[in-house]
Image: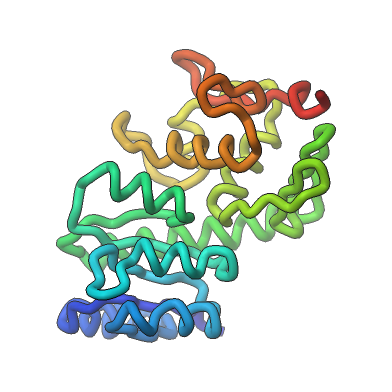
Length: 233
């Protein structure tokens, strides 16, 4: 079965170009040109991946992401003409998995999409029978779920994948380079903040004090470390 992509883009020329391009590579594509129709269509159809323009008229990409994220567990890739970190941080907080800057290069976008879909597939296949329990915290890689004090934590797919990387190697400092490579299959350029922003969101959702975290700590000049002992207190 072909993988499905929803393209939510009000630029008709760009939407048509992407639709034709991805169809050539055997994706089932659907184009939505209005932000007003996007949320319902995505949650009903549950595509493998959504390409979502940030600057849609009437209902923008951030609003759509917020509306669908609790129900839609697939991949959201956001298109943005803005290099503003504030927009990207807001989108990451709402559960966006990755960004691509406009103007779009279809081959680059295709490579990024394949990477995201491959990562999701590999995550589902690798260690899919494992469940790791650390006191109050349980991370289940088979069910793609996380509970704290027996309460389900609404992590996005990308947040859960990143958390799994950390809990799979407790008491080990994992560098941004390691996490970036495992998480996105891209080299860390020293500037990309996606790992840092996602760690911040995971800490927030797990009630790990973001100003003085103790469960997922920052190890200076080394990276991030999951601390098992903290979750037993």
